[in-house]
Image (cartoon, rainbow, N blue to C red; front, side):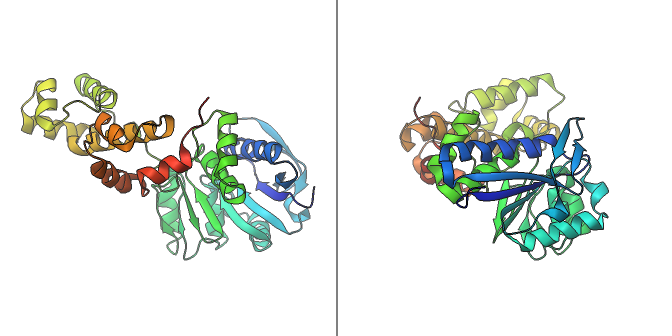
Length: 324
């Protein structure tokens, strides 16, 4: 390893989520290729050296046992997976994670890897996120952790946690941006053909995921119409007419079947549309506000801050795609 390279140690174990390893590893490897000598040196370690089988059946060779790794480490990353819960009582694993954490500049987790950090006491008194499926488990088992299941990733001091699976890519891109600047992170994202890394405050739930799929075929069609036509009249009266219902009945049925009032769904859908335009175009903010049905830049600003905790201008400066 070159002395200028940042040492990344990714911890895996039986039953881990393969993409929790592969996604961040490819981000760091691509960044290393682009950054040269100042990039990253990646190590994959497990409780015991040798073959480790992911939950999907793919076998990975961990060349190093955790006990054989000595600091200093730049970034320690703990992956998650459906097998994580089975390892919370593995004192050998958690002891090695705790040891390495104290020898690392920063500590990170992907998905349910946050459970292992919490088991080591590394999240005590900190705000953290994880896969939404295990957020309740994290909160109940470790009440000293402030669990926020919504963001894609959270940085609290020198500890970073991310949401489920593909959010590990967003986390890794954010780490690259912190180390080398947003320009390199953009180049890595373009090289991997993924979304430019999303701000940590962005919800891990997109508009379709944030709403339940309604059993009614007509309401599913209406959701698709809303998402495809943000600039149209999407008021409750207009939507009720399109659905062939009275306004009161429509509002009640839509909310019952999707879990979200129609007005809130429309706002979030328009916010998603604005986010995509900010990433992919150079349209001025008044044009984006008009084309997404938000009307004025002031409304765009308020909606954007409410959903992603960042201004539209800051989002564009950080995450706009490069011109081809």
